[in-house]
Length: 96
Image 1: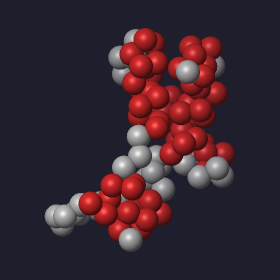
Image 2 (image 1 turned 180 degrees about the vertical axis):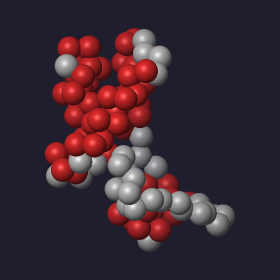
Image 3 (image 1 turned 135 degrees about the vertical axis):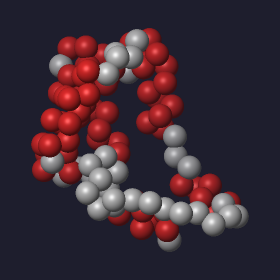
Image 4 (image 1 turned 90 degrees about the vertical axis):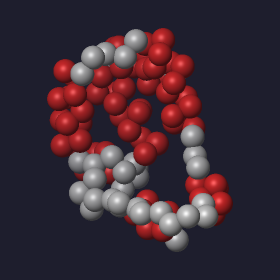
């Protein structure tokens, strides 16, 4: 996978690849603080590249949106308007 290989060579470009699917196109360039936050996370133990290569495709392709109407119990949607990873608009989409 391109993102996991890029992380080993250029971590900033690798982060851009991983962040892109979860953010609107103009979000990443206008929120440089997000990259700074991710840089701080370098103190976390590294994920073995083989593990990342096996799990990342599933994480990036998983989409439960079509299954939301099947939910038959009350659901509390908690979302912050300053969330750096998931746009607040997503909460309104799920709510609808």
